[in-house]
Image: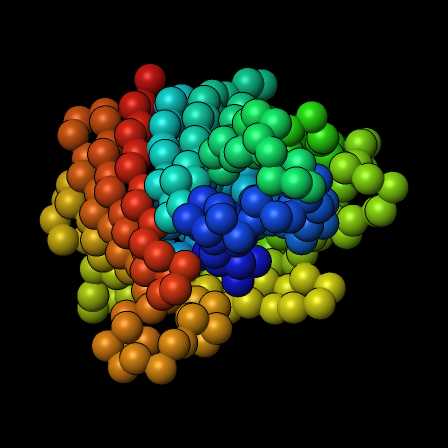
Amino acid sequence: MSAQVSKLILMLTLYRYCNKVYRFINPFFFITLLSGQTAFTSLDIPYHFRSIGMSGSGVADLLSADVSNLNPALLSGSKKALSLSAVQYPAFIRTHFVEWRTEWNKWYVSSTFKGVNYGDFLERDINGLELGKFSARDAWISLAFARKLAPIADIGFSTGFFQSRIGELQALLGLITFGTRVIIPEISTSLGVTIRNIGVDLDSYTSYKEDIPTSITIGLTHELRYLPLLLSVDGFWWRDKSLLKIGGAFSISKDFFLYLGTSSVRNNLQIGRLWKDITSGFSMGLGYDIEKMSLGLSLANNGVGGIMIGLGFSRILN
């Protein structure tokens, strides 16, 4: 989880549990603050439990489930399937993920819905009088397409609409992501490159024009020779920051998997308590395949940001 998401969770937690303080603040100021700081933050968070367990890494990992967000080229070669996943954040924030994959005319296609529910909040006027409740939610609908250029090379792109809504206010984006993946079979390694979230602002909360978090990502996934571990290392670059993510999928047996991950965000989660600082910023998960079905659970420790819990299910339809 990014540092911006941690700030959002802390802010929403304060709003929920320190309402006596916030009742003296104009609720519309709170809406402006929230929209100005985090309108497009959820473009960069993982939505699938496997991505949670691997700390959002896997730009070159063909088994990645969150392909429309990470690298649409990874969709190439996938089977017709339905995937569902949900993530519980602190402060009662929840995300939802639904994806359907199929094949059409030599193209591999997926349609995906991602949603974030930040919850309902009590609105007050400047005098602290209750005006009712308002909600904060994000929704992202996208289509992804991928195909093979050669036995060792895939390309793909995704396109869609992203809406961030707080009460009656909304921001709306049109987005597109491009990705590619190249296999280096001699060393059991894949290289993935993406340009993510190229967008156009269709509607804004206010007249202030917010920056769309367009980024470039380069990732390597390597299958270890003497250990049943698929290791992924990804670098993310935005205009004003960068991020390193490391994750792995360990095959305990043919049908049972252990996911592990961390990222450079953990450097921002230190609170000066040794045991909590050691475990902060790490994630893990378990996956189990049953014939054509897969089940999974993952956890991510974000220090002061709290614990994330992800659940998922997928079904191959072929």
